[in-house]
Image 1 (tube, rainbow, N blue to C red):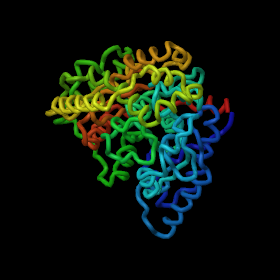
Image 2 (cartoon, rainbow, N blue to C red):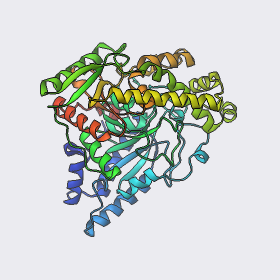
Image 3 (tube, one colour):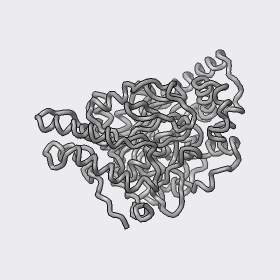
Length: 469
């Protein structure tokens, strides 16, 4: 069996990594070399990365070391290796948006968010895989660019979750310290939940979306995936220029459990883990009450109309249909079946979305958050998902497995997912916190409380993947 060096992040998380770097117990260059070595050892089997930028990453790491050696303080994320979802433009790297269809002309040059990462001193190690156009299936499948292997099962290729599939797998396998994803209908939260890591879907517009492939300007958010809520809170604060969200106090916390939509059809293991976590919150002093989410079902139905209309407008129906033989067949079928939407119809759809969003905010009045499962199932085998029903099958699967997350995007809310599988499941399970627009720090504070109550989740056994490599 091949040997592999432990990830430098260790048990101290990003904060501990930064302290070790400043005490010069390790260097950014040495840490980056270790992460690149882990990628070389694990990714031939896991397939999380679309592109690895070893030369660029080491150059950035050496620049951080020079700053530290000169006595400068470059910030809390300096030298921290990060992976970018393959929808972001980054100097010196290709951007495919998970497609064989050339889309770089639709993206432009490196945008303000990636520039923010660079200013913070982050070391970009590469680009991670995604569903085609960051759209398609909730499971993270990509028949042309490859579907990453969920590291929680070495024998069965299980769904990594989509569309930020590679970002979640890279974090779960310790091939980066944190990763960047995007979330249109759960595309950060589903892969985070399936891979047993923490995920944040901020309020839409929290970070600008220039310099990336955007298939739904209405619903897209840039999101974070990391090993813990504490790490994510630190990254969020550093990239937002705000204080690190503190752990919430259970006493006085008021959480709503949706009585409609969010718990429909969930698997017993998912329900059991969620119930135990909610019970721990109650025992700690939180007030947990039932709540009805107005318009949840209507919001879920509106999702596909938004995303397909905006994708078709972005890329062009003629261009998509001309490339029908080179794009994901399921996505091709969805596009082909979507009738053209007139401007006035889209305007009415958006006006109704805003009405539903206002109603949702009103239902959150007097509550700190809603608490729900992140996704109603554990990661299924990929073999059970491919070729099952075409576009109709995709829509059925969306209805069954995405209701917890789609509503959050359509209603303009923010959310986190915390791994809680160690409360009673063999495979990862996520617990979702949903807050009002702009309450991202509050969501992270509640997630930090949950993390402290339930304890750290287990890590996947990576030894079989090393043996296979």
